[in-house]
Amino acid sequence: MYSRIALFIDGGYLDHVLKWHGKAKIDYSKLAQQMAQGHLLLRTYYYHCLPHQSSYPSLEEKDYFSHAQRFFKRLNRLGSFTVREGKLAFRGIDERGFPVFEQKRIDVMLATDLVMHSTKKLITHAALLTGDSDFLPALQIAQSEGVYITLYYIPTEMMRFGHTTNC
Image 1: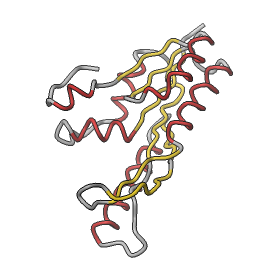
Image 2 (image 1 turned 90 degrees about the horizontal axis):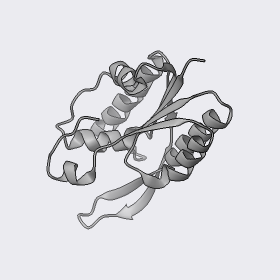
Image 3 (image 1 turned 30 degrees about the vertical axis):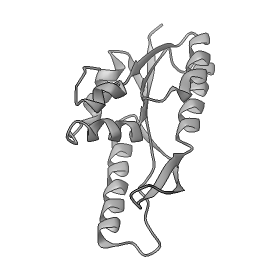
C-alpha cells in the first residue's frame, strides 16, 4: 500500500512568519512538494481570510482586497490546491487607534478536514504548517487513526529576534 498525504497550511500564520523574514516570495507548488516528502499528495489545503474592506473602501483597500482575491484564485488553480476562506471578525480598537480583526472558522475548518481525512482513511500522513496549538485534539485523533503527523513551524522567539530556521 502506498502512502498518501494531505497538507494543511495556515495562511495567516504563514503571513506572520513571512513578515518577519522580509515578505519573501513563495513558490507554493514547491512548498507543497517539500512538505509532501515524497508521499503521494492527495491535496493541499490553504486556510485564510480575505482582508477587511470597509463600507466605503479607499483605493488602497480595494487594491489590497483585489490582490488577495487574485492570489486565492491562483492558488486554487494549482494542482491539488484548495483554498478555504474564513471570515474576519471586528474585535475593537488597539492602543494605537487601529481596528483589530480576528480570523474566524480557520481553526475549525483545518481541524475538521484533518479529522475527516484521517477517519475516512484517505491519508496515511499529514503535514501542518501552523503555529497554533488549538489543533492538538485534531492531531491526536489523526494519530489515533494511524496517521503520521509532521508539523512545520517557526518558534515565536526566533521570529522575534529575526532568526531563521529550516522547516
